Image (tube, rainbow, N blue to C red; front, side, top):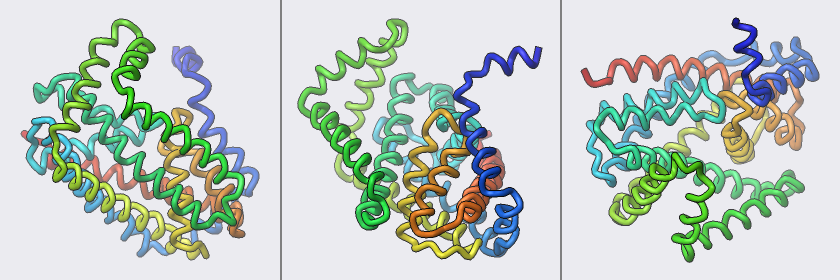
Length: 311
């Protein structure tokens, strides 16, 4: 029975783990462990401790975002809900488990459309900042990111064209998008669209600026979190270059072929860090340390979500 269940799992969900096995075999497991075992555990402990202020920042932003849609959460409940979303996203392909926040909002008598709208905007805020940060730093290091930068330029042009069309012809785009969705989901899709647009116009400039501020603060702390892992392994990687690599690896981790960035982050680090002479085993050790710290952080956040959950 168990074998039949495994057989039914889509093959693309195994792509991330397969990539990890292949690249570790390629670099040499003993070499990877040799670099990883030399990590400064004091710095690693500091990285783990950073999970608390990071989730507090996200909780503040989540509460601010919900407020624009008329959903009022206490600070503790907001942090608990967001911590739960992070834990679930860690164990699902493409971080789709983060949508557990939708169910939690619906349980609080929030409409389906409003709950979906808030979760979509929350994800878009993060993706937008990560992509822009990675793109800016790739331009800064354009000598190392040659072919990769050309590909990103094409993607940016396409995205800007879609965004411009959205601004000028949003009603037309809405109609086309709704028709692409299966008929049984169209009512919820229309409701979500209307909630997204209505919430944006009603939020006001002050709330939007606050959302942008807390988003930038969080990702600033996140990039520091990443770089402390570099320091723990005593690798010679410039801070801003590491930020560019981490941003691109984060974008790849959103693909549904990976869980917690397994495989895609490893491949991205080998490709991008190799441009500045970082050995394969060092790139893999860094990726493995980031994964290990992330999993420990998820344990910490689970405890936070339980402690702060409203009774």
